[in-house]
Length: 491
Image (cartoon, rainbow, N blue to C red; front, side):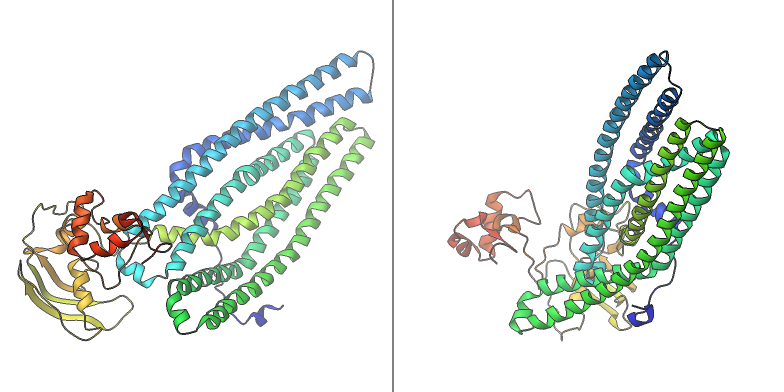
């Protein structure tokens, strides 16, 4: 499957590794101290794991030159192996406990932060962004971070520490062992980095397709009544299938490239293992090291080199996560269209006089003026109706009074003060609104009526239902005000 046959335009910009890790680190800021403490535990864990193979080396050396006097020392080393293995198990227990705490905490605050960001962003953002895309970015981004942290804590971090310690020990035993190891490990790392540079654009395109598919599915489900009413089920299925088919083609192309690099990486590991083994046998033959030392070197180098291949596979997955994490980061840092003033006016009473003074407004990504130099005054206590054709700006005016948007030019005044100077949540409490599209939450009739005032008493809720002429209808429902409405209830 040659690349040109994909017939797609790829973004060739390489992933900026420093930027990626900086973004990830900022997203998990509340857990920094716990993560640092965890890596201290992991370092101790990996260091103690070298004690067992070293003691085994001592035992083999004693057995090789066995005399009855060595029995006492052999038993001592066996006992020490038991002690140090117990210490390793204890450290492993506390490290795992810390990992689970960090992962569950990160999942909690990332989800809460994402929800907070979504409800704080202005209406304009939600109107221009596909609902499915937003949910997909959040959920996939959080899932990838959790998956990546688990891999980093259990696999990547310990393996990196293990490789570094292995290189140091091998230099200590014989500098030539260290040199061989230090030759193959960087070569392997270079191949891994090269792979991710090559498949990076394909990975980005694949994630774009994931987002597109999620948006398409959400759009179909949200508008399912229209889809069925106009008999467009097959069309929706076909359009979704086309997106997924393209995703599949790109994914296979990406994975086949990865397989080619995997062969090269495996050959580097194999050559490294054979080189260390042959050189070790030569040193034993020449009498420069003992058989125990050879077993020790082979044991730790085999473990490190095989772990190096495993870590490269995990690194590939981490790089795959980089796209989803980058998108979550951008969403998390999305600028607010409407800024609530830090010391905004918090009034306890409003007269309700509204003025538009030469207001002009243009929606984002539009060249057409929704409002063009509009001026009018609505006096307090009066009824005012806006009449005009669809698209004439009636809804835009209502949304500007609610400050879902700020004017491109001019000013909106409330009781002769600029609307932008009021605390958003303070003045909005004085406004009652009946939207064109009634949005019902998946909860009881009672909770839906009381949504704007969560603390409302049942008496107040019943009074509101009576004013809206809904009391008689609600009384006919099997569970009355406790009836579930919304997605899984009745509307």
